[in-house]
Length: 145
Image 1 (cartoon, rainbow, N blue to C red):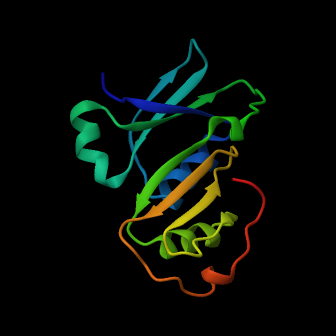
Image 2 (image 1 turned 135 degrees about the vertical axis):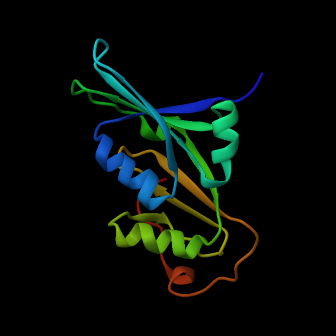
Image 3 (image 1 turned 180 degrees about the horizontal axis):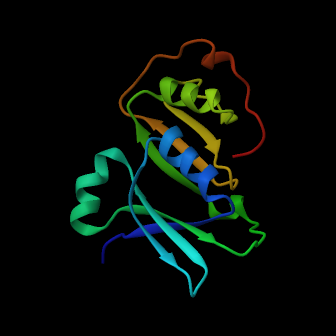
């Protein structure tokens, strides 16, 4: 057995791609357009997983965009995706600059939580250790993650 991908249904493909690619730094590996089924699948990989994803087509995040409007609930029921990042402060600042709320700021220099445009909880984990710094160390939690 091997892990292939995690599928997330998204309501706005452009907003989701902006969040996952521009915000988090994931790279689009390939996409499938299915006119008969009226959906688009976009497969993304973390930068350090790109070569592995090319070779095995895994591990990936699959964004499923159904062309017909549907309401998806239960984002918190999903749990969360987790990504290791090189600089948690830079990543959180980039996301904040894009208008993303940092739900659980990286007060400890190690862990933060944000939400995607579809309310999916994303955990960011620092690769190695960074000392706590302001303004992050004093930032309160916002909402739920």
